[in-house]
Length: 246
Length: 144
Image (tube, rainbow over the protein chains, first blue to last red):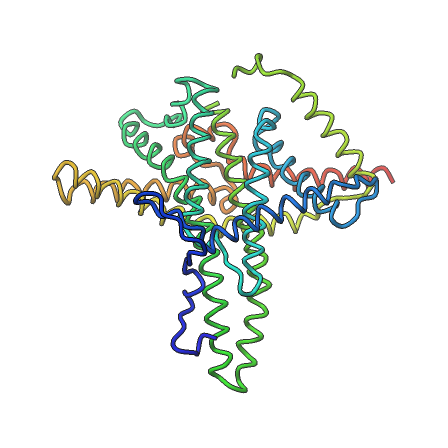
């Protein structure tokens, strides 16, 4: 595909409006990105509803998937946030399933990977960041500022360290979103680049095909891993909100 | 939301779930091999480390640029905040990588307020898992 008319490996990230909606100066069009988010929500909802319909003692495949994902996130919250974090299970679980399914659906040829756009991941990270900050203040009051005061530092270094701590707190949503976005975009670009070599190289194109197969496997791992990393880091930030400077 | 005000139903639910899981896992003989846990940890560390520095640099540059624009002090705040942001990114990286690589704790002042007693909960959790697995193995071999 990449060999026709100079198709760029980055074409796969282009946003196309499907239904154009203009609200004043804001462009609220329903795009291919929105379409795949809607599909993701639909698939996750169906998976959970159908998976939990039978409630068999010995679970079938779908029920296993539903139960395993529940147990995975439930354990993650218990180990990283503690019993008090259980209130936030619905949010964490929804976010994890949304990202996981979005990443995995993006692996299907001709589909669109909405997590490869930093707007999407950054807004998600911002929700986590603002939520955690609000929860932190609600749970600890002014004691929450202890988060920024390192223990056992020499007095003359303290002003500098506090500034650095504050900055490193604000860097969190950026590194959180950047990690997911960069991983997804880099992986998908690489797949397209090697895919483009196949036609150009003729018979020797077998090599890039082999590489593409290997990369596809790697990308599935990355898709799952990055959804996991995003979620576990959110849990750790939540943990900080409950236990600043203990 | 003080600790004592939180209703204990959640605590109870937690212990109940924990016990139910324990019984289930024992029945199924599910134990995680140490190697797999260790490998997963290494994978994640590699993914996290670099991004932190880039994000720190980017955030510092953005804040410095905006402040300069606002206060008309170009380029001084840009320079200062790039340095501070990169430092913050490096500190974040060190927090992730320090213990698994050196096997020692970071000095307290470098851990930030949050992790002072817990260490890095992420790595701590994986470590405790490894320890648990070997402990369980020992126990089961002693029982035989």
